Structure formats: structure tokens, C-alpha cells
Length: 628
Image 1 (cartoon, rainbow, N blue to C red):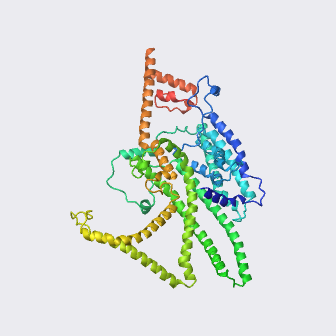
Image 2: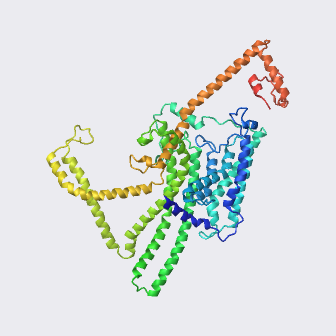
Image 3: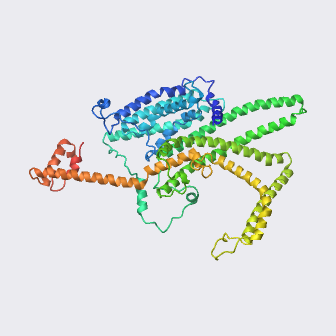
């Protein structure tokens, strides 16, 4: 693990030297430190506006604060289904700083090697605190104030990023607009947040001026969850609609299922981090290519000096050929490696929906037996780990897949392409034919063993409807001779089977290393896969807290409780009214109407009149709720 971190630190060393010759007035790392000041002020303002539900006792020290300074929640990581893409874009705005942490570039303190984990923890807290206002302003109930604060904070980051790009646009690896190539995803996310906060402000202002109705409180049961329960209660339709090729093979959209904001934010951030990772890797490739060009120049000078007659001339030519092939293969395999990881990100969403639907149906057979009753504490920790681990798995997976694909490409070049280029195509075809013939004979002998066992050493079928013969031996003497003579042959054959098992395991392991939704461990060792454990724990937390049936049941209980409470209030009000002088309902209605019109004189001009009546009577419920 330490070697992998060292490799990544070396890979990112070049990216931190992008503008060594440019004197920029903006230091993004220093700005990150100073941005904590406005961030804390925004958090303090939103916390002051946030009301505490459970107030302390009178002897508490904080009683003088009243019910202000409630806890600010940046994002509900479990049950948030509204405003999902805004949260996803807010996560995308943190991509550059996440990559900065991923490269272990945050070193504000000189500490021993064993204490690096604490320094990285401090760095993670600082990055989270610097970007906390984005999420807090999006989730705050006080839309008017939070939109202004969020717009100002986003504008500050946007302007600073623009200055960084404008003052030092070029770099030493990608040339012109190198800084823009690195920062345009975060810049686009900040621009989206600016537009969103401006829209929030205009909408909140219309609500404040009374031009639009007040937004309703967030319901416990979302619309798609209620529709899911209704669909369960409906009778299944006998006729099924014909699915298109895309729906049958790729993805089918379901209106009764929505991904939570955590999943959307994770995927958006993973896409941007993967893009930055590929750009940084290409910068490292340019750096290594330049170094290799210098090395090749020295080799060429040696060949010129020796007039290509030295003893090392064949070796030098082979080294130059290897360098040329490796550079070409590395560039070509960038596309398939990146497309593989991009497909994994989409596949993660498809697997999440599939696994959640199975858990809701009570089906846990797709999980290993040890994961069917996970620890509650481990599940709570898993949902905190999942998003970060998913991004890290994608980035490391891309690098490993790219290396493996490059090695396979070099093998193909040396095995197929170069022999043809060196006029040795016939020899290559002969060797390829012999290899294919050998493998075909071995596989054919294995198939022949199965056919002989099925034809000669098994008893006939018991019935005509049976799919295969019963596991009952026939011709036992011949069977024992068959086993004896094949015993020595299968010893040699087992060596090839063992090597093929190792090769297939390595290929599948490296190919699926970025898949956190699937374990690559053998059966019985799944708990050693920490990424898969985080995936399963996250699924269980979402299943227990966002199950539509459970939420519908709780919604019915709360609605019934409120209705009973309202009925008791009406009965209590009626009993109080009956204790005094008896008043008719019409007189009470007119009295309430008069009181409402006195408190709201503008309503007199808005009242409708009917023929023969001076005004239209209002019901007591509507009058009592009128308060302008």
C-alpha cells in the first residue's frame, strides 16, 4: 500500500509544478485556508436562524441563546431525493480539492510517517469545512438568506478560480490553456451553483412578497415512494409492454424509483475526479516521454559514434523499439481503460437499483451468507465510507486496468504485429497455428473424457422426460481402468489447469478491481474485501431508512395521529362554546367574517357579490386561517 501511495505521489508531483514560471497573485492552497473565515461566518448565521427543537433546561448555560443556534445539516445522506442534481454539482465543485487530498499534497505540518493519517484527517476536515456553505445553503429552510449567502460564497470561489486561470493559463506539459483543462469542471459547477442560488433567491423573494404560496414542509413519504406502494397494491397486468433494445439490454427507467442525493453526488464527483486523474496521468506521460527522448538521444549518439558496429547495437535497437511500442500502446489504451471505468460508474447505479429492489422484496440470496445479517454499527460506518471509497476504487482501478491493458497491448504487438513488420509473418502464423492446435487437442481430450463418461459409465435415464442420466455407475471394471490410465495424464494436465486458474483469477481481479459492488474474493473470504463490505452496509442502511412500505406505514400513523388530535381540538372548542350563551352558526360565521374584514381591509375589494346578497359568506375554517 505504501508503494502505491508513493507511486501516486510521484504521479502528482508534476501536476503541482504546472505554473512554476508564472507569478500568480492567487494561491489556491492559501485561499483554501482563508476561505474558512467566511465559511464559519455563514455557518454561524445559518445556525442562528435554525431553531432547536428540544431546548435545554433553565439551568443550562446556553439557555440565554433561546432556541437559536440549531445544528446545521449539510446533506441528508440517507433520505434526500429532492434537489439531487444541485447537491451533485456541489460535490463536483470540490473535485480539485479532493484530488489534492488524494495525492496527499496537504502537508501543513512536519510530522513523522506514522502520524500522516492524522494530517490527512485534518486536511479532509478543512476541505469539508471550506465547502460546507455550498451544501448548507442548499439545504437550509431559510431560502432568502441562504440563497444570498450561497450566491456570495460561490461567486467568491468563481472569481478566484477565474483569476487563477486568467493569470496562469499555460503549463509546461499540455501547453496552452493547461490550467483551464484542469479547472473547467469545477468552474462549470460553480457557475451552475450561481445560477441555482439566484433562482432560489428570486423564488424566495416572490414567496416573501406574497406573490407565491409558501413552500410546504418536506413530506416523510416522497411521491415516487407512494407510487411504488400503490403499484404493489395493484393487480399485476397480464399483458407486458414490449421493451426496446435499450431498455432490455442497457437500462430501463422506472418512475417509482429514484436514486438518493448521495448516489448522484458520488457519481458526479467520481466522473470529474476520473477526468482529472486521466489528465494528470497524461501529464506524467508527457514528462516521462520527454525524459525518454533524452535517453533515446544518448543511445542514438552512441550508435553514431560506434557506426552501428558495436556489440551493444542489437540491444540498443531493441530497447528503442520497446520504448516506441510502449509509448504508442500507452496512449492507445487510455480510451478503453477510461471507457471501462465510465461503464462501471453507470453499472454501479444499475446494481444499486437492482439490489435495493431485491432487498425490498425480502430476497437476500444475492449476498454471501456472512453478509445477510450485518452489524448495525458496521452499516452506519459503511454509509460514511462508501462515497469516498467508491471514488478511490474508480481512480486506482483505472490506473491498474490501464497498466494491464498496456501490457496486453505490448504482448499483442510483439506476438502479432512486429513479426509481420519484420517479414516474419509466416513463422508467426506457424507458431500461432501450433499453439492453437495444441490447445484444441487438450480441450478436445477433456471433452472426450466427458463424452466417454456419459456414454459408457452412466446408467440409462429413468424416464424419457429426464434431462440427464442419473449419477449411477455402469461398467465398473472399465471405469476403474479408465481412471487408472488417465491418472498419470491428468497430473500433467493439472499443471496447465492450475496456471489457467491463476491467469483467469489475475485477469478478472484486475478487470473488476474498480467494481465495489462485486467482491473479487473467493467464497468464504468475502469479509476481507472492505470495499464490498462498505457497499453491503450502505445498502442495508438505505433499505431500512428509505423502504417505501415502511415509510408509508409511518406516514399513515402520523396522519392518523394528527387527525385525531385535530378532532380532539374541535371537540374541546365545541364544548367551550356550548358552556356559554347559545349562538347560531350563521351568527358566528358573520362575526368571524366581520373580524377578518376589519383585520384585512383589502379583502373587501376582492369579495364576490351574489344577486340579492351583499357579500358571500365564508366558512369558519377559512376565516380562521386567513391572516395577512
